[in-house]
Length: 372
Image (cartoon, rainbow, N blue to C red; front, side, top):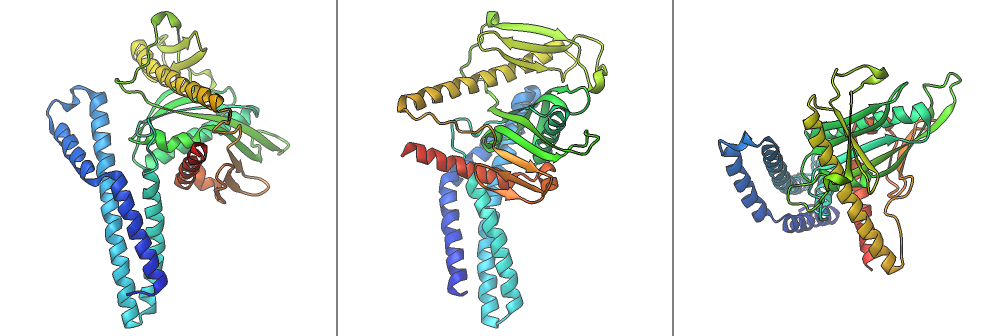
């Protein structure tokens, strides 16, 4: 067998995989995959398109997770054999390649391990993401649009469907706000660590004097509700406004008052939807968003009440959770986890997994600290 260092690493990986397998409940996962496969095979599946999308999405996610687990088990076994043969034959090239593969496998196992930390009440839900520009004028609006593109790119890289509910364009450039859903199991648990204030520092492309500008954008992530969720919103608590959809520069998207804005009077929560041509469809979509936000608000209030009872009120997220610095140096750094990347372009192109994994681990450690 390999030297003691390699052997120890492989045994640690095998032990981690055993724990992951127990948490994932592989037998239960296989049964659920079979049940979902039977549902997908039903001829009337697409009579209810929303349900069909959920079923096929969950099946794809579970099958992908199972395949990923089995593939990693095989790779760990293969790398052990490769190291053993390389040492027996004194083949340094094979040992070096096996060591590189061991590093790649270790990183992949750590990524799969993060999946087992998503065990919150709503972590397995799809995600509803809202972004709004903050301080910084046109640079902030441009930053908000960049963040939306970043999350959409991330979703595309993972083959997750994105549904845009609302985009409110700023006058000169960028977005005032946007709301969109990412339809994938565990999208909420994964992306919830993105909630907070994001800060951009760069030479402003909108400043004729080429001065450095700091701008801010806020990201909110809430779970998409299911029919079984208890959240009652009486009609008399909602004000409905309809208006004509608009695009960049005030360009008309359509010629009817199809866009809908809902205001929840008791809380002042406002949501809009303009992605459909039908006013009724936009109202239904806006109601989905409103209920999701009200549920998140309710949970936050319950948590704050419990924290106050403990006498230890601490917000989970600070006003500023991540910096994107493009000048005088280039780095993206998460202020909670300390995780950083020296390639902002890659991050803006959707390379977020490292930040997400670090954030999920940080959140879990914070929860453990609160329990003690």
